[in-house]
Every structure is written in structure tokens, then in C-alpha cells.
Amino acid sequence: QVQLVESGGGLVQAGGSLRLSCAASGRTFSLYGMGWFRQAPGKEREFVAAINANGGSTIYADSVKGRFTISRDNAKNTASLQMNSLKPEDTAVYFCAGRRSAGFSTAEFYYGYWGQGTQVTVSS
Image (cartoon, rainbow, N blue to C red; front, side, top):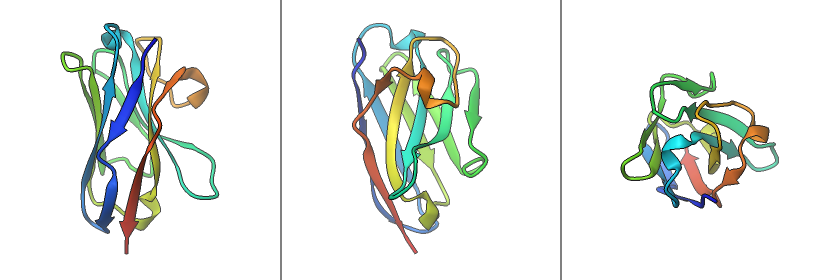
């Protein structure tokens, strides 16, 4: 069982940056693919970024490519999402997710572990 806790959300002006962190419990974090998803008000949850278990491969949604960077530190059981050049349309609750597979996925169906979410608000 893995528990995930996000932190780092907040209010930022357009063009600014935030760094989200996801702290994972358990001793098997290094075996899990990790992802970030977000849900804006009135919209379905959508994929943002994902990273495989050893951190060697990543994938991004087109809407954040070049602005967001996903990373992980298996020694510290953490995954992070560095968000730069933020836009008002990035406003959402951001969720960290883990899957019991070394690979990553863009589909939330394949993630069995979820954090509670952290709010990111970008003002114009």
C-alpha cells in the first residue's frame, strides 16, 4: 500500500512558477510509475505528466510540454512537478498518482494510488 501526499500548490500570477511535490510512503516507491493529473472546475480530470520508475522516461500533455517538468527522487520517495510560465488555464486541483508498474501511462485508469490533490490558481 502506498499513500501519496501532495504539497506546493497556491496562488501565482500568470507567467510565474510553482513546484509541486508528492511524498510517498512505503518501501516500494522506486518500483512505481508516477503521474500528475489535474481537474479544473466543471471539467474532467486530465493527464499532465508521467515518469517511469527509474526516472529515465517522461511524457507530457501537449498543453504543458516545454513549461512543466516532472521528476522523482527515489532515495527520498518523492515525485515533483516544476511548473513554469503558468497560465490562467493551468488553474486546477493537481493530483499525484502512482501505479504498480515500472512504466508510465497517460490514462488514470492504470493508476491505483492517488493523493488528495493540491489547488493551483493562476491569476491573469
